[in-house]
Image (cartoon, rainbow, N blue to C red):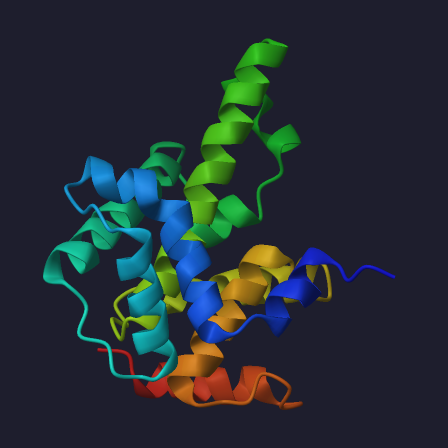
Length: 186
C-alpha cells in the first residue's frame, strides 16, 4: 500500500523537506532577486538539518514579502489566514459568477494559503519565528476539520518539531509545540 502524501512527508529528512520547500519557492524567490542554485539549496537544507544555518538576509526578506503578499490577498477578502482556511469556496459565492471566476478565485485562495503555511515553515526552519503562529493555525485547522494533518499542516509540524527539538512521534508533540511557541513569541 502506498502511503498518503502527508505520511510520506512525515518520513522525509529535514534537509530534504527544506530543499523541496526551497524548490517550491524558487520562481517567487527569483522574482524578488534571490536566485539560488540547486547546490546552494541543498547546502541550506543540510545546514538547517544540522541546525547551523546563517541564512542570507535577502532570502529571509524575500520569504517575509511573499508571506505578507499572500496574507494581503486573504485580507483583501476580509480574512485572516485562519479564517481563510476555515472558509469553503461555497461560502464565497458572492465573489464569483462563472466557473472561470470560481477556478481563478480557488487557485488564488489556495496559492495564498499554501504560500503562508509553507513560507512560514521555511522561515521557522531558518530560525526566524516571526510567522511561527501560522504553523499552529494550519495544524489546528486540520486537527479540528480533518482530525489529522494534511500535507501543508504536516510540513508545519515537521518544521515546528525540528526547531523546538520535539520528536515528531511524541504523543504530546502538539502540546509541547504550543508551549514552545508561547515561550518564543515576541
